[in-house]
Amino acid sequence: MAEVGLVLVDLSLKLIAYDRGAAAILNSHPLGPKPDAAGFLPREILDILRGRKLTELSPVKTHFRMGKIEYMCRAYLVESYTGLAAEPMVALHLERVSSTSDAICEVGAKYNLTEREQEALRGISMGLTSKEVAERMNISPNTVKAFLRLIMIKMGVTTRGGIVANILNRASMEDAEPAPRSPSPRSSDHDSGPVPIVTHPAPLDRVPRAEARHPSLKSKGI
Figure 1 (cartoon, rainbow, N blue to C red):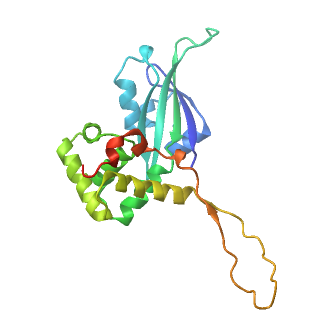
Figure 2 (figure 1 turned 180 degrees about the vertical axis):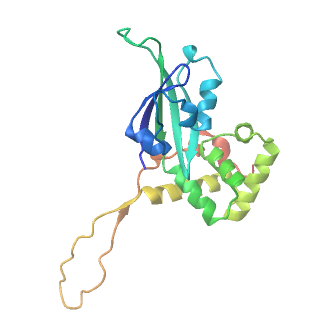
Figure 3 (figure 1 turned 30 degrees about the vertical axis):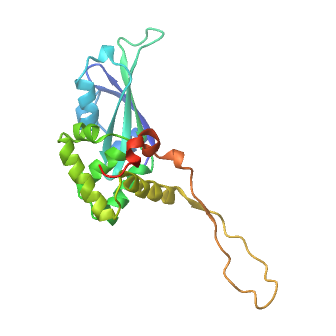
């Protein structure tokens, strides 16, 4: 699956161009001249484009999922410097979210979390408060707290920090790359033990440091 892609649409949301990365991400190849982007782009992207005046579009972003993989889309208004283009265009930059999202899916499967529990988990991994997660999920903050309590019970932890630590540990395990095994000369016929393999976990700055940005995650309870 591609990591990044680029799509160009006009102000009426007619598709102008896209690269192979975008086609792979969106798993679609529209036919015909200037097809409507509605048949090509995910609903989350269409919502941010239709919800504002495109000629006044400032860089905005949204998240969307294709299967189990989460992507981020950034939208930019692009104007012709030479005047060759009759009107401005909208450039959509698609990029796969870091391994944190994959880690959440694995943690969800390991602890049998429901889809809504995983959605709440994704929110706090981004450093959002209960209120912000509630707004994102269109539920009440108390319901978010109930989800988090259930997650804590399933994981066997007592704090938000414990939840986030599970995500970070899983993400670092995914990013770790084992060092190549090198042959070890045998000093004697009795030296036949296995050669240890040392792994080097990737730096944690590749995943959201939710606790660092939100001290409240370190406190116990919700």
